[in-house]
Length: 176
Image (tube, rainbow, N blue to C red; front, side):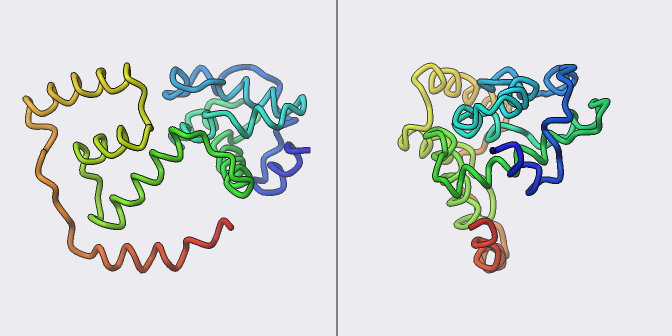
């Protein structure tokens, strides 16, 4: 059962959750998740393992720990989400949009040491990591940010990119 795997990896017992909903109520990313944290834990509790692993929730979690701070049982959904991501990655279950986002983000960090937002969005669109409505929304937002000087079109690279690549190469096999 997936719940026992999650407990073994994360140290958090999903079965200890009594579904109060504080985690979902305090989650800043819940509005874009297919299941809020409470609902995902419930699916985990009742053995809907495939739905849990195919959910975008574990990939969208911002790791802010609001859920943990608000939980009366002190259960860390964030730690469970990390465990679920590791399990999903080992099983090669990654939603297409999430995979495109992570691959493009990693490419930018390894090539530039930072995220170049305008180039990142363009590459993400080309990989199919965005729906048409998301593209239109992002273009409108990008124009507003650019006009206010908050979005740079210049592609920049930080010093020390080689050090980031070395660190990545040392740690990339940890989750496999």
